[in-house]
Amino acid sequence: MISIQNLTKFYDDVCAVDSMSLEIPEGQILGLLGPNGAGKSTTLRILTGYLPPTKGTIYVDGFDVRNKTKEAKTLIGYLPESSPIYPDMLVYDYLEYIADIRGLGKSQKEQRLKELSDLCGIRDVMHKTVSSLSKGYKQRVGLALAMMSDPKILVLDEPTSGLDPNQIAEIRSIIKEIGKEKTIIFSTHILSEAEATCDRVVIVNKGKIAADGSMDELKSTAQAGHMIKLSLRDADQNDARAIFSEIDGVDDVNCEVNGNQLDFKLSSSRDLRAELYLTVKNRDWILLELQQEKKSLENVFKILTSEEK
Image (cartoon, helix red, strand yellow):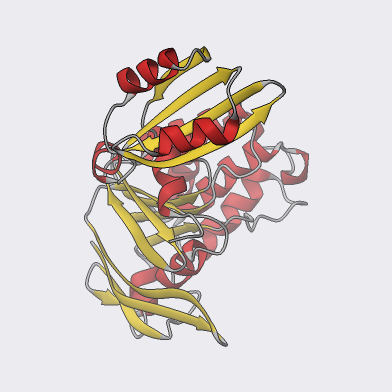
């Protein structure tokens, strides 16, 4: 459905996207994750034909977005982070206006507006002005806008940015419903959103793909190892750090001081809880906490997008 081939984009001397290649099959919900400046929005803007690439290309259902831009755009519905809706118009009038621009006939237009008002949950606000809506409802109207021509592909740039938890859950539900019939690509900073919504996640860092796979694949293949939290009292920080660092399998030791308590985080290639317990016991330190953190997308994300990479 979508083939991204050696995509590169420079802004003057700054490389926003660096030789990115990616295949996205039909019917997949793909989450594009990454820190600010990672290249997510630039990639989506090139995909939707709003920016030209410096090198490489994107094929949408066989159409090269560089020289078959119109054909590619007809297959895509795009909702940028700032939804381009006119605040002074009624929701119904605005969507009718968009339907006219997209060339829908009268009967087709009426049917499509009804379908979208139900799908996006905006039936009760169709005769309100856009400016009077909450941000959550504005995003719903934006989704209706992107879906007007019934595109095969839906591209959403930070669709839940700035929404409260209830609004996020509502948008998530709409995306999952739409994803039953369409290919969806959306960028987000909210890791839980990707974890709850996506079939596949691509983590981007400094314009490159840092990881690509399902949630389970990312958690199992990322070199996150084991992360163990350990809280002590009556222990010397430097002494404890040195002793933990010497244990076979410990890769990194971090420590925070909270009053007379030392909070350690140890990353390791194996489960060291038993050895750590015996080490603490043999030194008469007071053990306040010892637990192994469950691998999460947040752990993987931090590792793959750290400054040291």
